[in-house]
Amino acid sequence: MVKMPHHSFYSLVGKPVVEKYGRFKGRVLAFELDDEGNIKNIIFENGGVILYKNIKSFEFHDDYLVFLPSLVKEGRDYIKEYRDLSLYLDTLKKIFGIEPNRLFVSKYYRQLKNKYEKLDEKVGIYIKKLKNRKMKIENELNRLKNAIFTLHMGRENGFIDSSIYQMVYDFLSNEILRYTSELEDLEHIEVDLTDVSTRVFGLLKEFEEVLSGEEEEIKYS
Image (cartoon, rainbow, N blue to C red; front, side, top):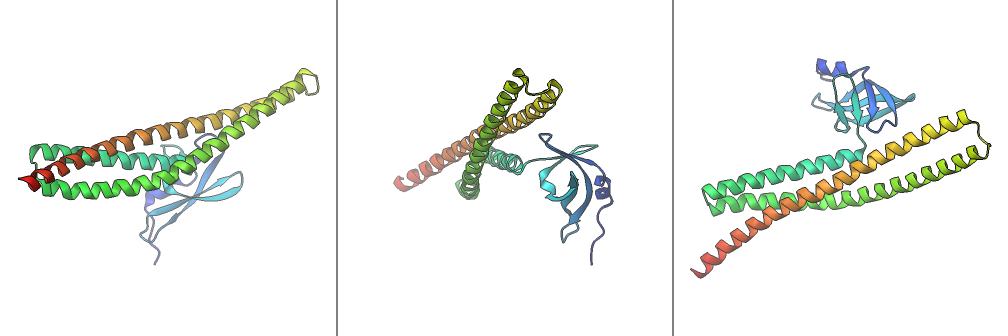
């Protein structure tokens, strides 16, 4: 039996969809539900092509939706996971300061360390993808800049009409701005990932030293 979707889902239908960097604009056509009756995929059109994208790839605003490239979305999710781990470790640190129960702290320390190691492994793979994407963007930027140079040479020599030149120049310049914006986002994500992962690693190291120190005291007492 197919479950009736929540009525608020229908408010999405017809809303504009904008790619984060302005590469395309479309409109929501429908949605797909999972087995629990929750929205899973958003169906939208892009230049007459129908696309199906996971709901996690969107930011929701009052009058429109923003579609995020998968690398940007994935990076933001990892940053949030690191920040959550940092919050848990900070809380555990405060609890340990109030009530230094070694068994309690050791239990949660092991759980959080295990989460960190799994997350760190996934992020290592993600960083490689991020660097590859950055390299591709830089290559595209160089190609676009070379195209503008060639275009400029054509105008200067009178081979291209000024109105045609301006139209093509604007198009190429806008594409450069889009790629530059995406590159900046990826660079910020890379920096933020390094910062938050280093903080979590530092907190885990603190706990490791404290707990191993207590074990030494017990061993030699």
